[in-house]
Length: 56
Length: 446
Image (spheres, each protein chain N blue to C red):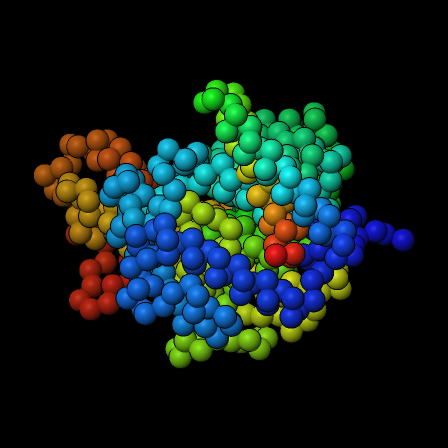
């Protein structure tokens, strides 16, 4: 995998993180949105550990 | 040709060149230190007292100057606010989703809070382990263990799920029922302590007339809790009994699952250096040991665990670096032969760490008992047995049943083990003038 590929994946991971955080912001405290988005963020953290830490 | 993704859970990290691993580790150490410095009163004070700030960390040598944390320090701050974790907690209490605790055999158990993110991390660390041992989506994994408040097989369960395996929790069943369920479901892998792996094979043959090699489909076994899977004779005994590959792994509640044996079984366990920093210190001088085959005590950091960080934790495990690079292609360093000992005087019985002082604490906490006792550990076949001889105070002779119940409770709480307890006439057990020898481990050493 090239560095360009990694950067592209990293950008996608950042996008997921941004959207999950956006869900929490827009969810108006609805727990079904907030808690499921929090779980997306936990999984996103694993992607960051596995990929993004190599980039930044 | 086998692709990288067929061998490695994450080839990006597992085959990283050595200098890149070191660079990544320094960066991640600085990050977790900064997190703890900012969010944990305990760590903030610890580092300020040492005159260190996260920004000071630029090299491995800088890391070696960071103060270590011992279990006794953790015990000292727990059971305080925010209850029950105290000043090491780095997140709001309501963000904690998982409670686990150490077995408490060396004293008061240490409580371990994890957030859901931390719990994902636990599963992730186990995913590295299981994938390296050949677990795949097609596996049906049977876990013959009641997970309780102890972390290992919970994490193994979630790690296997993460890989896409089908997981069967076999906790409440007895051994015979577990074996029959494994047979019925054609389970392909199990996780258990070496003692229990051997005990199950024995039960299968003697009580059920089953030969695990022919009558069951287990092809992979992952061990935890005891060093047996890193002891060649025990590993061979298990592999012969089950007709399966037996793999070791090492983890701890307050650390994480930090080390694993891969499919090559090359005499060592990889340290997951993307998630953990393992440093080995000379037992006497405290100097960092980088050369192979020299034993020292492990000091370990988990880079990504946030609720209650593990930074420069003195585990008291004795380990040594392996001289070889593993043929599997992982660039993660290996330790030779697993954990080869403990810096303090504790031993493992039935897979549970036991400090002889905990028995003393239990016996002497029962006022109807005399001061003297004798604990003897033996091995029957492949199973550990621990007997405990005690004396009733003469005036408590008619309270035997109640005392027995109380002692059993205390022993379970303090040591998490069951004993064969026998009462002896008051004054009949050996008395000592100087160094007492009340704990006797009569098992043959491997």
